[in-house]
Length: 107
Image (tube, rainbow, N blue to C red; front, side, top):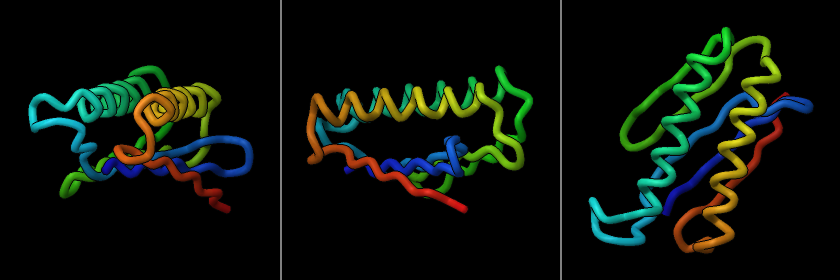
């Protein structure tokens, strides 16, 4: 199962983490893992290329973590929210047997 977590401070999303595998199909054939990978990699690339925010990215043992450090631009907030919308749509289509999404308010 893929576990997605989104981190928010006040009214802005500033980061996310993804861990696990959907196990929807065999390795190399899993359209859900492919979709989540494409969305998350695109989000990280867009955060890097389309904003001047300080981005911290960590990949370790099957987990991807990305967060904006310091001030969060409106563009970063929108890009992370777009990822959340994409993953939520996958959840709605395929159910919580493959992906779960959590939200955490950070002070």
